[in-house]
Image 1 (cartoon, rainbow, N blue to C red):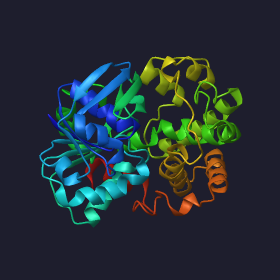
Image 2 (cartoon, rainbow, N blue to C red):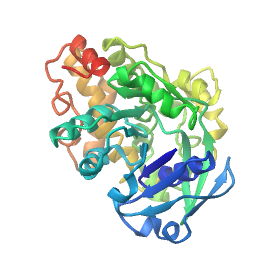
Image 3 (tube, helix red, strand yellow):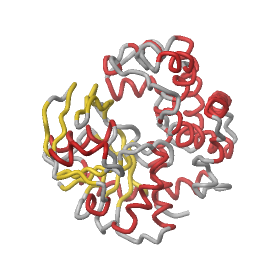
Length: 360
C-alpha cells in the first residue's frame, strides 16, 4: 500500500518506519526541512525500543503535493491544533479514493477537518477518519532515530460519516490490525484519554517542570495519588458528557486495560503498573502540546459540549482556567467549540445523524 505520513515529529517518524516495516511504500512530509534533513538524504529511519532496526522509506519531502500524490492512505500525525492548517495545505491536491486518518483526532478532529475541506470547496470521494489515540508512545532520540516505548494492543478508529467504516476497515486491516473500527467519531472523540492524562498532570507539576526542565518521569513520578484523584474527576466529567451524546464511554482505567492489558485498584495504581510508561520524561517546559494541543482541542470541546447539553464540568473548567493564567492565553477563544464546529443549538439526535450519515 502507498502511504503518506504527514508530520515528522515524535510520532510521525516512528509511524513512517513502523509502516515501512509492515511492507508499505511510505513517504514522509514535514513543513520544515531541518527535522527531516537526515531522512531526505538516507531515506531511512532507525527505530529503537520495542522495535529495533533501520527501515527504508520512499522519500521525505517538504512538498505536500509530492508527498500525497498517488497515496491511498494519508496518516496525519501532527498536533491537533494544526489539523485545520494541514487540511488547507492538502486541499488542492487531494485525490478521489484517498483515506485520510488523523492520528489522533483528539476531540472532534475529523469533524473540523471535514468542515474545513468543505468550506474550501473540496468535492472528492474520500474518507476522513480519526483514531482515538496514537498507536504507540514514542519519542525522537536523535535525528532520524525514534524510540517506541510500547505499541498499544488496540486503537479505536472511525470514519466520518460512519457509513464509510466498511471501506475504512478494508483499507486498514491488512496493514494495521491494531486499529479496531468504532461505531462513530463520537466514540473516538470523547474517549479522548489525552484529555485526562496530559494537561492536568503538566499543570500540577508546573513548578517541578520549570525548575528541572522536565527531568523526571512524566507518568510514573508526575502522577502521585492526589494528582490521580484530579484525573479521575476529569475522567468522570468526560464520561458524563459522552453519555449525554448517547455513547457508552470507556473510563481511563478501562482504557489502560484495553490498550496495555494493565489493571489496578484505582487509576493511580493502574498507571504505575504500566511498564510502557517507564522512561517517558516530562516535557522541558509548559509551552508543550500537552497544554497547547490538549487544552483547546480536547478539554475545551468536551466542556463546550457539556455546557450545551447541561452537563457540568467543573474540574475540566478549572484546568482550562489555570492553563489560561499560566500560559497568558484565553483558550476559549482559540479552541474547538460547538459553535466553531457548527453544532451550536443542535440536538443530540442531529449531532448523531451527522456523525452517522454526514448530514445535519
